[in-house]
Length: 378
Ligand SMILES: [Zn+2]
Image (cartoon, rainbow, N blue to C red):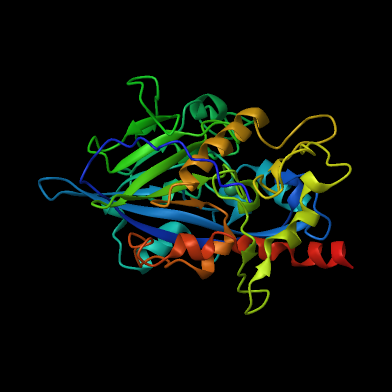
């Protein structure tokens, strides 16, 4: 078997500073068509049930001052009234269900976190399952958004009938749009911003999915350095990211849901689009061991849910380099398989490497292909 490609080095500047990270399980959105996000179709896996992760990040400076940042706010509880009417139409059109019992502000308060201590909340992008309800936070909490979001949302609905966000969510607080051009700097070939200026928390420009789509890289331990990469909606299922040339599908893979024994990686080649006679927009010549099962979706006319499908695909290719680094744990906002492998807020996620979360969870997305496999092998 050919050996895996050597991944490019992720060039994070040296630093001993870290942030404390917690993964918040803010609820679920269920029954969305897989084809909305990714393709080509794999018969037998048609709808996706997606967790909605958000993140609490705590930073302490040299003087002992603690800053708290939320990365994403999840889906607001009252979808019908917390967002512009177009968003309720969207939910009813797709006939999806959602299970949101608390606003993220309530999850925090119930755990004893004083909302007055939240310095900033970040939208990875302005979509209904990420924007939450900023107006439930005190006016001292700054709202941070990616480049171009102000232009796309223009002050909110109804003043701007096209906006998905209500006007009240922007009012009475500082709104900061990130500018990746002010001090050009890259990590892993992505435009980067050092948020606290000490190497503990970087914003990364991750264009393609939506206006101003941003990711983040958080230093979770130093000496040795480990990081959590917040992938937001760069991918919706780990099958869009893996396998890749840096970490091919192994000959044997152990899936908790299938059986106590490892199963052959080869089994999954049969349902891989690269192996199909008519692979649609997948490339038939690609190696199914080293090519993700899915790409960003596109319809027959080439249109896509993604704002820019080419940029979105390029972003995934860049994230594969982070995913290839054993010291970086990539966490997508909707990577449901992780639920069984990570500690959830109020617990911390900093010890992810010592706890083996990455290695244990890496291939577990394959469990979604149980039906496709039985269809393909029947
Ligand atoms: Zn999302």
